[in-house]
Image (cartoon, rainbow, N blue to C red; front, top):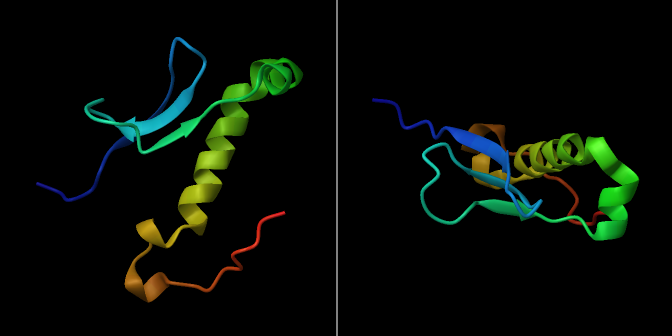
Length: 78
């Protein structure tokens, strides 16, 4: 059995987009909720934007990096 976690990105019925274990148990690891104004501007792209945000958070986070792959990233986001 592998120690690899299977995660999924899901849009909930209230419009919130979450990153959670594929089993769907417990609290989501990450939540994204767009304001009504942002949701209207993004329209059908809302889910794709959320996917990119989650991907960026994961790839920039040291939480999911191997020790040998650690890189220094600036802490300031613009």
